[in-house]
Image (tube, rainbow, N blue to C red; front, side):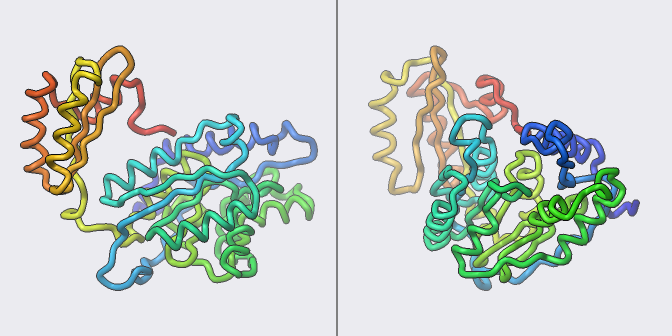
Length: 330
């Protein structure tokens, strides 16, 4: 394997296991009669070329300011699957200076996908969808988006080639019948005018982008995260000077005791573009968050807040540990 691929075998193997677990739960492995698993999206056995970076879809000198997320899947709404992608996307947006305005969770229904996707791309600079791009009957995201933007569906030749390359050594590939092959190839059936962005050397599925704004992702968290991170080089992100700074202070005082001060503080600093928030941790205390563009000013306000609420500055890592949340959820 070429050294330029730099593929993390352990991570790729982890993603492969996660995908296979997903297929088993979905009834698409040997647990379902006469059905063979579809190819995993990621492997350490190949080294695909990345797509070239296309021109800025927002126009030269422009960058993404606002974003929306569309989470698709009955399994999210009926509680079968714990949804993690929106949280990862929210952190991604904050860290890159994008103002995430909206997250919506909708069922696997065409009219819902059509209405929500059209509405979001008219309001926001960057929209992502998560889920509904597999080979089964309820994977209708590509088809629904084709309807939304008045495009036919066509098989994407390069995606089919990469899928075949990844699958050629799988024992089940030669035993699939015509119907099963057609189901597998549905995962490369995209709206005709969509961009296809291959963002990782060991993943065959591309990020499909429509209207220069809407990017389609798989729902599997590990793959979603890898592909979203890989997409960074293809996005017109805000310059570092436009990215906000977040400062957090913890106090053991009850929220009601600090509420009058925080109300007064927010009124005082609103014109400076500083946002003040408070987030209680049950029976333990409150995290106060200060967010603004001017790091120096936010830190200055942090010292004031520390004194007023008898608190101390805490890091993101300390907050995650206190809440028992992993910094990366796969």
